[in-house]
Amino acid sequence: MADGTKATRLSEALDDGQRKHPLLAIGAVNALAAHVAVEAGFDALWVSGLEV
View 1 (cartoon, rainbow, N blue to C red):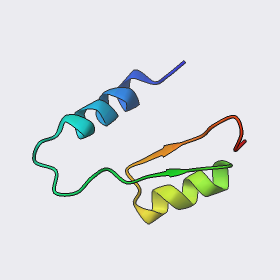
View 2 (tube, one colour; view 1 turned 60 degrees about the horizontal axis):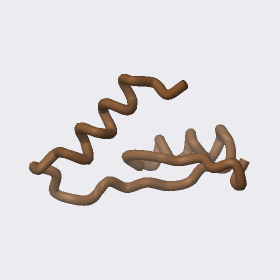
View 3 (cartoon, rainbow, N blue to C red; view 1 turned 45 degrees about the vertical axis):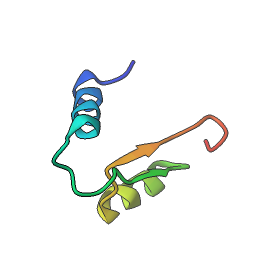
């Protein structure tokens, strides 16, 4: 089940007209890759069944 708070934050970020750059997203194949993406400053990440 999706976390409503995270979904709300993503929705608000997408609707933010004051944003100076597009949202940066990256795919993560495991928890370590997700951690590295967060540390690198990506705004969003996705995981697909094929990657996992």
